Length: 360
Image (cartoon, rainbow, N blue to C red):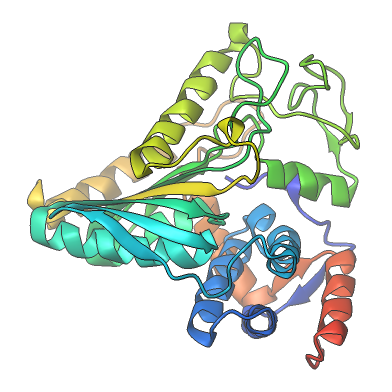
């Protein structure tokens, strides 16, 4: 769920339409060698993140990183991805260094087709790159009356419980389930206490962070509020063992097993060079388990019951996963997507470099 400390202030924000942002983002992807079809897919993943208020995984943070990786040759703009292992309800994809925001939707479509035939479909992906907002891929199942799941393992910047050196990534998990009249249930979290992209965003914004969200180089939790320093390290959900960090640690390793090992990949910290990402997407056909109409009606009743919980003192309401993002989408469709002036300046520079016309 979005947190205000990771958002550009309204005083600084420059609002742009989602159609403008999609168009210019697509052109930038095309300039670095991505096909028109794949560029549209990539742009959609980023812009949907911005519309939903997940700014850490929208254009502000991710686009510049992707462009740099394409230019450095780390990512393959035209991957020859292929299914290397397959059964009726499962498949494994070799992504050929293809960007996850392009490969994962293709994998989810395969999982959905398999679920239509068998009731459940799961696809693992190896040798890929960042998949963006994990819930984007899980949500692709919603229009098919399915429950979608997606997860990803990348990097090695998170300390294990009691550790002082990174051994795994932020390893996000997302699940999306449809309702009838209520908003879909959409749960999307990193297994670290804060996603790395949120810390980078907070660093750009100069945000004062609460205590306990990251560690210093020795593995000590930073226990005083302050801005994100030049050097920091991430910690699992829970922070300390006393507060349950073993749970975040365990969830991160679960993602590594289901994404990396199950796809035939190798965890990043066991590689001498490179940091390829691995992913896992799955689709559950609700009709294979229960009546779809009854499921959706019960989702409505359940979500409404949760949101009608009397709020604790100092709080206005009780939220359910996906509610704030649904509201943000409606608002940002009308008012525009708020971008930091530094992001606009980056767009101006990159468009000038790529000879792409720039006009807000």
